[in-house]
Length: 415
Image (cartoon, rainbow, N blue to C red):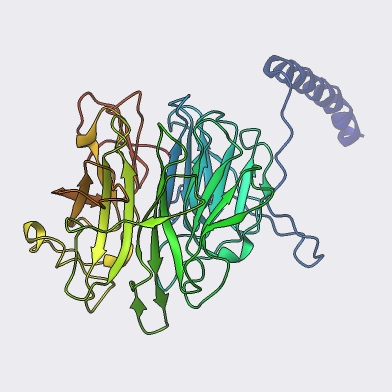
């Protein structure tokens, strides 16, 4: 009886306590407002044996792989896309403070090139398949595009290119796009070369094709005349035991009619080697004066890790180039800061840059050119509106005054 009475005395207290907690919990929930539903897990499986497994964050971590490209919108300096060789595509709308993954649910997350349409930042083209020449290079599945700023993505073809080095978009027409496709790394294939679309990627034609062993690694469009483009071809082949990064198919090309016809640029001032072999060539147009072109050139065969550059010029004959296979891009030839030029690669060695005062007119080739030493870093983007902003492989950022572009704050996306 005593035990039962004791239980009866405790019960009202418990009921009151539970009631109070329930009311307090209700008031607390009301104060916080509506609760967002949890985001569904990426890449859900329909396999009953794996359905119980879900991906979860175990970060922070810095294992996202190589940064292959960075693109910023000309109309919005805070809008940035970053593409990783093995870590997908990321978007920031606040200058790199916060990032959102775009390709979590894609079957392929290897990004080679990104292009934002200058006339419409909602139109973005992404070429998959890293453009590096590594034994472990990840292959892609063609070109993807969005017309709504990344809310939805559509596959635009060129699936068998496997590796895409550069994409450029017409300054005034977002439906005109050029893709420099490198093709298979370990063998020949037909779907490589320079492709052009005039309907936003619905259909493609080969603007320039050399052969099944030679693709295109870079393309640049004249901002003052979209009919003028420069493109570089690369003949390459990797095997399980080595890499051949050059050949007669490699070269620098120019068109005056929007890619209908192309002329190879060659002249006495163009860097030459004893064997006449060219490797990878990266190009960039100086926007304040589009007749000035920057080019980073591999020339001359060598043993070891790719095409050599020891014969480029006497000025840099003592440069320790090292990994010639990793010449990726020349970027940053900004319309007001030519001195901000940075070349891209995976080493810190010096290399030559060809400066063409006459933009390599087909009639005369390259005029007498000045050879300048520049520094290889990773791919950089320099915002035309904020010259001091530097976004590099890492992603590093420098918003300080001046043109010191080799150090800076680290943004939220890392390797």
